[in-house]
Image (cartoon, rainbow, N blue to C red; front, side, top):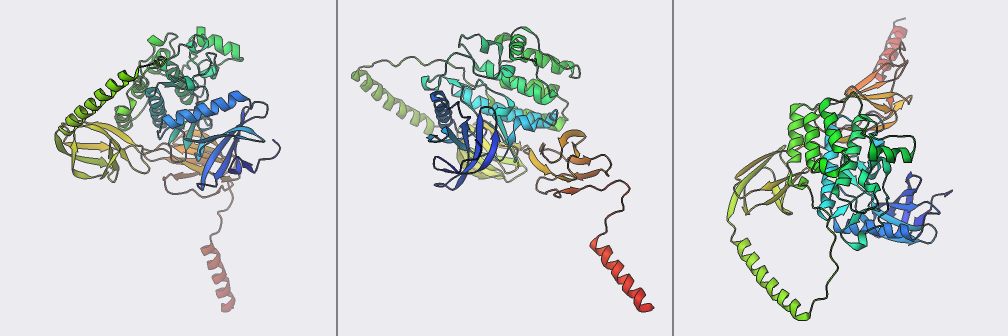
Length: 486
């Protein structure tokens, strides 16, 4: 398209967010709800009926799953000029692939991103859905550090309406060997493999089965061991060799097991490792439910439905009796830092510190606080006091320099060149350094809520320091004084 459209469907187009080989994503406004949305359209020539079916599949999956780490789909339609389009939640950030372009991601930030990715995958696996195309470009990282999984166009699930053909539709470099068999007998192990490839790429900056052609990539994935850099420790090498086992039964049994192994082997400080393990202990990372095809519906006589209805009423009454008979008990809930909003199975309990809350039975606690990752924990009937530690969420900092092209270093690790949005892991203090040949280096500590100078003015080496307004005023006063003395 030579020019951006001004409207797609009912949506007013504000600009272009990104463009690739398959299509374009536009920033738009929903005039009915006055909110920003992202509109995805396919490249001209690809807008056949299959595209609309894929878009509808994404919308159906979004309707089934409401999760903070999964993109929300608002609408599906067809535009007279552009064909099928998908309206989705707008995420102010960048793709995980762009996020990792500056080089290997720091271990603390890597674990934060992978835990959020795992939460998204566990959520769809519990619904019997396999994504089949997990890769960095299918994750968005918002400026507040929250990661979101998107693009369910080739996902498979137990519902026939969510099932594609048995052919391979993913991305070869990230796909598990069994994806190429054509049998259609796929499991969650495919997504676990792809997440391991994503983790490997973010950690090393390389792909484990890279090759010069697609056919060569396919051969390496199916027949050859991963290409693991010698710089990785023996512990990390063993972890990835297991994660990339050709036989799915020989890999890690769950995403959580893979992440727990990574947390042990990565060079994390003890405080960061403890917080990561606390996140991995959340019930939200429980391993998911394996995909089992639904049987075809049976024709059931009316009298059977009547019996089922009577039994259902009886069962509901028994459930209510036992639910009400659960013993109520008091529990104190504290968080570090305090001020976190606490929910029990979705019910709002208030903000920490909660010195005494009366609850009935157990359930799942969820703590939410701005600038911190949400924390989930199971509540047992025996719990009387909980002291929970929240993990700061990653955040991003936009760095521009004058002149541009300066190399950016965060905590001693190169993050690319200016201008660039730098992702900062939440915990601890961080130091940004700007370097450009022929100019004095510039450095500053980073704070989540303090913006950097825009742009950062770099000073040439040997150049006199720039006069401040105060110095200029003093020079004028001195000149006038000397003039009057004469």
